[in-house]
Image 1: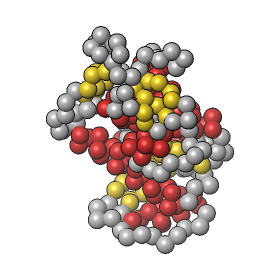
Image 2 (image 1 turned 30 degrees about the vertical axis):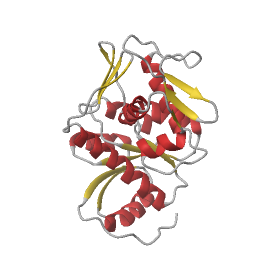
Image 3 (image 1 turned 90 degrees about the horizontal axis):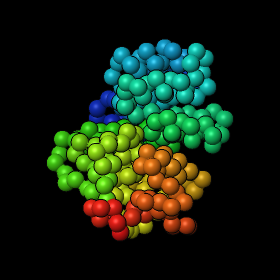
Amino acid sequence: MQVPPPEEALETRTRVLLVDDDAKLCRLLAEYLQPLGYDVVSAHSGTSGLALALNQPFAAVILDVMMPGIDGFTFLRQLREKSDVPVLMLTGRGEEADRILGLEMGADDYLPKTFSTRELLARLRAVIRRSILARTSAKKPAPKIAVGDLIMEPASRVARLGAEPLSLTAIEFDLLLALAKSAGRVKSREQLLLEVADRNFDVFDRSIDVHISSVRKKLGDDPKSPRFIVTIRSAGYMMRRLGAEGAE
């Protein structure tokens, strides 16, 4: 992996946890990120990394899938029981199944280990920015959004289906909110990626489809006969425009 010259340093420093058993990769990434305003703490096993993630504050976690001790998926599952810190997963094999599993378990984004450092930096900034926006938006009053019996409260980042709260990851909430705000209008995958993931669209990137599938499951929505989220072939997704009783 070639490390390009660092860009301008950030004004404030950001603590990031890097969990990867490849000590050389950890050193290279730390050397690249440090001049850009990041303090990188490295852990070379899932066990030691999880202990750090649960006991120290970090703006984000960069997590490898294949590690000694506990693997990245086990790490992520245990972390999500207690923390919503943004997680950017690294998939060494680049298999789609790994990426899908990571996203379904609550990862905020993923990268194959063939990544460029500039791409890593862009993804890292994006997941941290989303996390900050989520926290700050909770402090600002915002009107509730209702689509049928789906109620979304942007200020508190609470979503309910009837009286039942929905357990959504940060990106799932943002996706559902983006669709609800535009009920009756089609949103392309490119638009959704730029709106909720804050990064450029990759034609091979299936993360939006994975997140939509997860949201549908949590809504109890049948993709073949959807009540809420409709797939528009070759175009994207659309939230049905529903009245208070759930009728269009």
